[in-house]
Image (cartoon, rainbow, N blue to C red; front, side, top):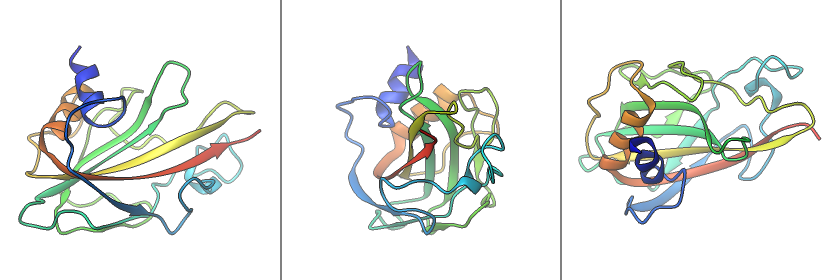
Length: 175
């Protein structure tokens, strides 16, 4: 039950929780609703090397209100409901960019749906196109999480401390 609450609070399901104002998230790799380039996908796809995407956000609450950022990447088209590919938290609150392949100093990654504390690249079954959502959360404080934190704990902590959020959605796969 805790995981459902955390997922609702982080915007992975419907929720009445107030998560603050929306801000803008963009990427130099693709546009909102566009196709994510192959290099950011899994090796099962030609050219896939599983790099994290470059992301930029603007219009978020500024420090001192924002002490940290978190990013949750999920696939809402997965067969068993939303599949969380990546949770990274405690990105410095003065940050507005994540470069390709980055792992910001001091950030921690929680366990994803695959039970690994790392970025899991898009990798839908061949012949399917899935949507991938990159949601950036502005947090009122750094989260009390360690590397490899449990997914439900991380999502609940993000929901509890969110003061703003932004999202970029792209597609990946083949038809």
